[in-house]
Picture 1 (cartoon, rainbow, N blue to C red):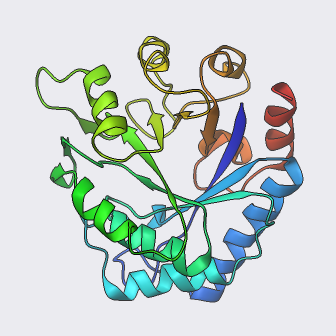
Picture 2: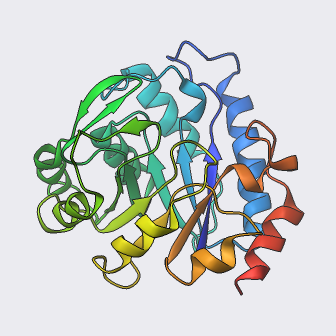
Length: 253
């Protein structure tokens, strides 16, 4: 299993949660990247987690420029896979940032179908994403959530059907399965169902991984996306802790 650490950016200029300068935001993000790199992760995902409450699917121009500015000023080891996630669900902006900053992939929470979220009903825009992606100057992979966290699927929806549609109809390259919320464990039974559908190397866990359960999850999935558990004392708002990173990475090495 590869481990990808999450960089939770503080609120960006343009969001209602912004309280820091760009230089301060960049410094905090760089510190986390340096610790993750030293700890041996295989990749990082940078997201505007501090921008809550999030806009549904159209990041403001000011926030978009700020996000791009932050990422372009980060020193990231070229050996790391780098991803961009624009919350809540602005895949076009994520792709634009990824192209401008030479990132490798984007994470899109709702690529197709619909989900009921705290931002209202979010409809996937797989066609628009595919159209925009075809114009880019480099190949950027799409990591797509199925039954994304902090959301509820439509009544009667099956996670297996949504997974097949993401792969066969919506253009997803990697499927992400998560728990109900940030830091909450992924349902191992859901993961096993999806493993039968997703090609080798293309299945990721999006929440809840820790040193106590990673052995079990590593038998089923290919990538572990870890945010909360790598922070000091396992607290989301704290900086990344080197020992927690090295302990987790060494557990699956």
